[in-house]
Image (cartoon, rainbow, N blue to C red):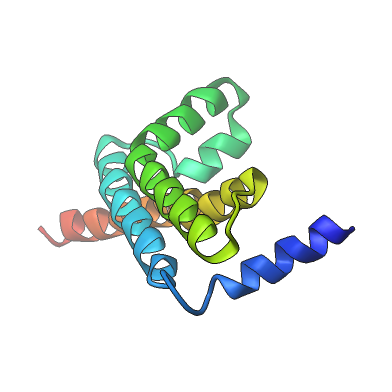
Length: 132
């Protein structure tokens, strides 16, 4: 229980003070990767990313691997920034906190945005095709 309280206190403390810019930088980078991959998915006719993970068990593992590969640089940057932050502010390193923050800031936005971007681009492409 004490670790859980410390975790949430540390998590709330991350939004202010040193290196708080990463709360904007990392999701923004994930958005750019989701935009790139969502447009690519729409042009190739692939189903929305998260929908494919949830509804196609045979493609689940490959889809998750693809997403991690696409966001690997962002995840690595997030890890480095989290290590620096924890040692500078907390004076120690908590692995589970780092993993939670990295997933929440880097991979979750990618996971949630890639599918809607795919749908939006497919709608836009279909509309443009009908107009011509």
